[in-house]
Length: 306
Image (cartoon, rainbow, N blue to C red; front, side):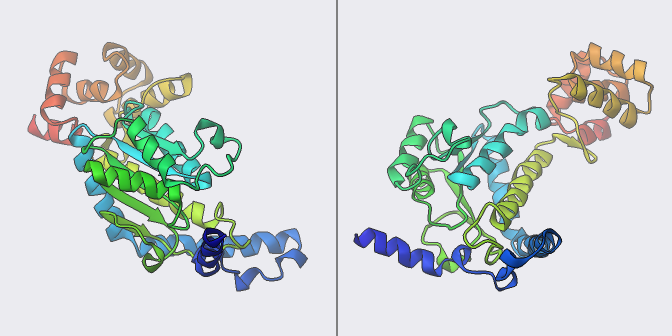
């Protein structure tokens, strides 16, 4: 009973659990007014994220350092936060050509929780600890906890166990730092204020977390040489749309026609970065690959050296 009362008291003061004065009469509003209220609150999210860019950049530095050492970026969350981690992780291989194990997302309750809420799965630190151990986490991995409230036990368990192992740890939350009782290497607190519907953190809180995760992985992959100018050049060609996108990229950046771009990609075994290096430098596939490797995959650096 005492633990229930303690939880009640925590919820009473959490920023994510307050009522929003801007939407007190939303139950009387017509559809146009409802979306105007929601959109007005959503506009505040980017400004809240803007105030935490230094912390986000510090987290990116940690992620890049870990990935360079062969570590993994591992997200842990529950409910909407957990689903956002899984989403961000699942989009890295096709977008940036990473291995599936390099960026992974874990949600309290397992895969089933992606589609149907698993009651009680987030309520125990031991479940987060057990997941960390199950994944054979090493000190080179980076653990990022996602918790709108900042207090999800599953997330706390994962972060604490990771810290014991020697991992760098990051927490992304949408309450202010003073409402977080957890030690991490980088705290990204983005207090977005009360939700339009009280406690519905799938709204502004989720939008803020999605923006931060976009910055984490996009920033890290840029720092790892997976972008040339502002174009993704390490994408995996897993379907026809991506194959045609790759041809367009080679055509655009090399100023060649469709047939030439297709030929370069075929000769490069459909590795976009190698095809670009060949077309821009005149090198053979072997030399282009060697030159890219010498420059850690950075096309600009490889071309400048030539």
